[in-house]
Image (cartoon, rainbow, N blue to C red; front, side, top):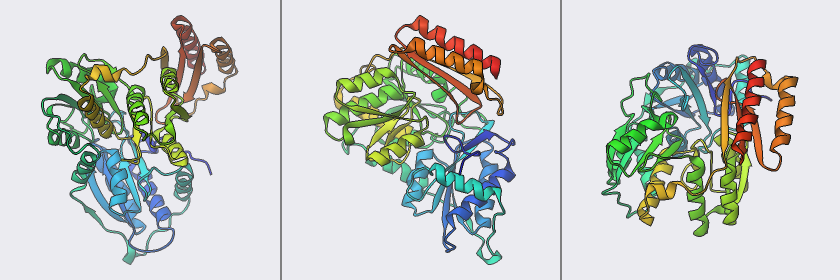
Length: 447
């Protein structure tokens, strides 16, 4: 079976445009409910979390209607980070968890992510099966078997307590000045609460959501806002999250940004030195910088690359028994502590490393010299297939020959937005720009 509705991170799109309409999401909830009730037994539960988008109310209600129509009982968490759903679906003994979020996208978009009873995101096969059910006649429950729905308290506190439990028991951040940018998103309560418990002096950015300002001039898509707050408050470091808090960027005391590659390099080196990096391997995607790979090779650590998407990173980690992975974009996955990328978890572990070593954020955020990398995005219509153009294919082949032995080229369609992404790495920055710009021009002409 193939998937059409689901991308690399759930179903996502413009609100009130298919597939993100109330009726489509209702059917999606009903199809998922039928999939998870396929044994026909009673007492099935689903937990539903969301970020702070205005449309979250609409989709929360639509999913609730869909799930309860097939006999699933619904527990509503309210605004919580995506990794909290992965944690709570397991600790609360639910059959499925759902997060309503479009991550780093603007408020006009929204999406739906599913987690299985083990707390991990669903496989491609499970998503395809749900799509197949959605496309047919969805059998509702008998009237006496319709599910119930209720709001639950304490989920957010359980998540914060779990994060704190992953840190050294004697960790005290007293005297450390930390900027936390929550992107006006799902972590707007959890992140300041956790940092306060750890004793840090906290400056909050992006903690006043109004339903429409999620990721607006803040968060990982606009790290400059947190950098300005670092300067204005003479802070030691900033933790910058995205809308659903599964991604992170670290900003040092000088306002310089560490992406996911640098953070993974720090953790992998430390864990390898301590003998707790399972398989002596870091799992990341094809987007990670060649400089990271060289850094790890120098320390005798292997790098395993996957397709783009933290779900594919996690699948490879589980298959190989590895415990550290992530993406350059800031998804950091530590399966000893979480089932998916957790920006806040990674952020506080970075602070713990600062405290343990006595080193500044600027010393820890730059673990390797990245190979020059250029990424450009070309927006195209849903139906356009510019990568099938003979001209574009020829340009890609020619570019790969020019980069052979000196760099690499990666071109793909985004799994979360209507974009073609063109990325290349090369020590020769003039050649790098020439190659990327040439392919971008051909893709734009064919789009």
